[in-house]
Image 1 (spheres, rainbow, N blue to C red):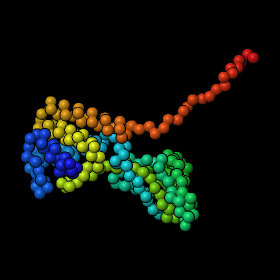
Image 2 (cartoon, rainbow, N blue to C red):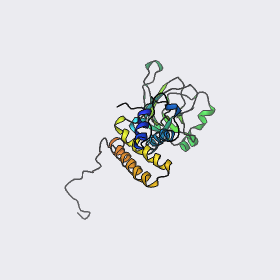
Image 3 (tube, rainbow, N blue to C red):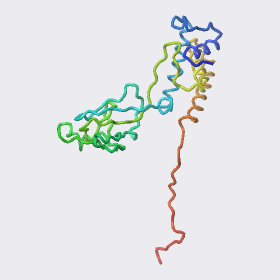
Image 4 (cartoon, rainbow, N blue to C red):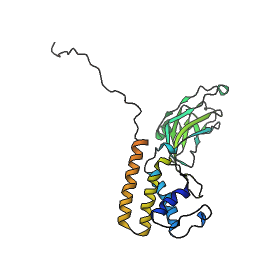
Length: 236
């Protein structure tokens, strides 16, 4: 079975025993068909906003830094930036060995390092990264060469519009999308009881997705302190 915006919408339409759409009349949908199209996007949006670290929303950004520039913008699609992943890319021609940057608090930057933005001769390979109040990032020291910087983030998804658009959510979870869209369909119709029943099923599907995709523990580090078996007394 194909996995497109058209296919998912028609699965929702079928649950309401309405006339299905085709690729030729998809953009000319009418009445409840339009509501089913909207419901699919609403369901996908709800899934995406229910967990910021879905692996299917993970992306990597590479920025070419500008000499003398401290502050940089994150991608407009970025929902959450993982500041622990900021690293310079090794480049022998620029004399940089690469490696991770240390995170500093913005207030610490203001108190200790912001004067660099008034100077023109203190740049070098950045060692620190900070998040700015406008949710972008800055570097200390600012770069003196066009270094490459990489970091990872989780992105917002784009609303589907064309019949052939494919959901970013993996196909094995298509039933979760359909359950959510069906719930919204009942909500549009004012059928509150059916909405509640289907929305509970939708939330259960998201919970299952979260347990499989997001709630992962890669390893467990022991915090046990090994003590000598021989006890000593304070009194000898």
